[in-house]
Length: 204
Image (cartoon, rainbow, N blue to C red):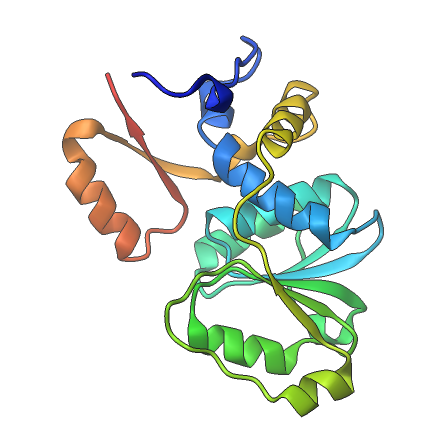
């Protein structure tokens, strides 16, 4: 397989295959947290625990940030709690930044209406359907909204790799299923039907 050298990163032998295969989505989560300008002791809320939401949760907890999470799938919710996330009345907490990672327009609409006063909302879920909000309500409550799409390359990749090498993060733990290349179609069907977690295709 031939790729541009600028997009190839040499990994030390100490980086496991499971961590290596999750570097790209981890860079997405890393970038979102970087631009949120958070510090240890701050409180955030993450709605939606797909790969990106789970990685934001993992990275934030490793930085000493208090993380509340919301997710309909109990398997993913339990996994985030096992990482150190909290559930419950997050609206009552001093949430600085709220990350919307569901990709649901309806969830985004409800999310913007529910976030605590003064919070910043970061949109990572990429729904093609329109969401809605009331400008007067957002202004009165001091809510700001911005999007976060991918990452700064190569800086964010290098930072993620360094954190893995240092043993600070272990992004491979979000992987929930491995499938052989021959079962790719079944894997794609499972992913589109809401399989709880990240599926990795193994090529022999």
